[in-house]
Image (cartoon, rainbow, N blue to C red):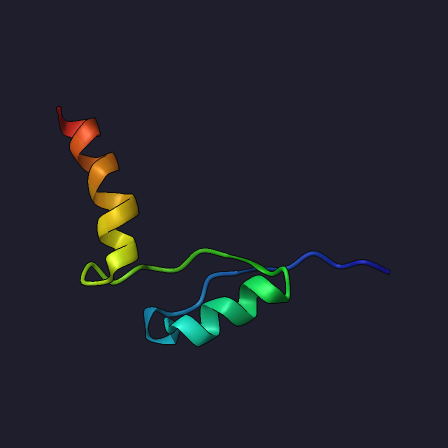
Length: 53
């Protein structure tokens, strides 16, 4: 039987290792991304700026 998972981990759970593990296990997730991360600056900031403009 196939089960699909979706988790919303606490922001303290965020680490590259934890995110890779969720991804590798094909577990969908929603987590707050710290604004100092390069990924945040690459993905979130441009979207916000285009929304404001």
